[in-house]
Length: 321
Image (cartoon, rainbow, N blue to C red; front, side, top):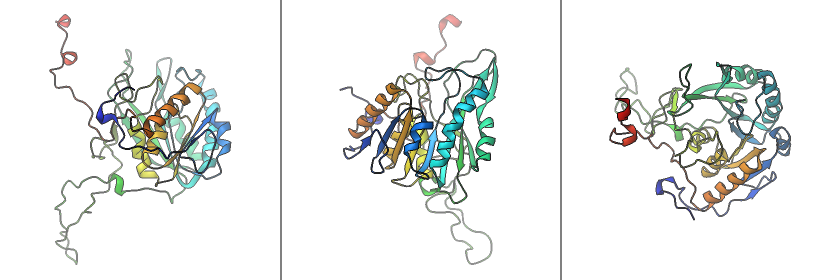
């Protein structure tokens, strides 16, 4: 068995997980093979608390065929119809997309998706930027280093768990200065302050709209053969904030199961829809690794590595001089 570095492991074992290939309310993880517009018919109306996914970007990856933008949205709409049907009142949709590039022109997909979701009655609560340091290098424009996560809710009475994402107060000793019964008393919350909608995810600081999480590239501990893989920790923050334990989390484009693993790790139930059988096989293997406590994993909030300058790869090549 391959050995992984200690920091990449989940702690403990989960031998009681129930994994099925069809929807079962008692299952911890459900894998549905096929197009989500069809397979989601197994799920009851309003059964899902959180939908979190990264749909195809129409970039001609191995799992998609490049289409015109009109054709692309026509293929996505049936899936969105099913998503809205299964999403519970008070549930959340986290839709993470990048940019579509047409003949060198950048088309921001989040701007195109917003009016569509808005017209379906969903309400945008945050537009979060996921920043990463590595990606494709452009030669005729600045290299893109971000993607966008749109957080919508179905209705106004939605789940939002503040305490799991509170941040330490910068000035915990600050006291009320206005005359009155609270004069001189601590003005903050002992659990920390309410984070703003500007998030920076490094260690436990959520105070910047940039989520600084490495994308899953060659040396990332979670890397599989999937070309556009979700980092698990990106999903964990949404699961903590927008669901409670035992809630159902859905990824309609589940790939190799990263969103499902984030849900399972935090004691939620998970459903994933995927057309590629090879990706489902990998996802099932990863769930087995999770059950056995050996899943390669980048820990939530782990600081991004910064080179010291002493590493050979971080030094200027002599050929350049």
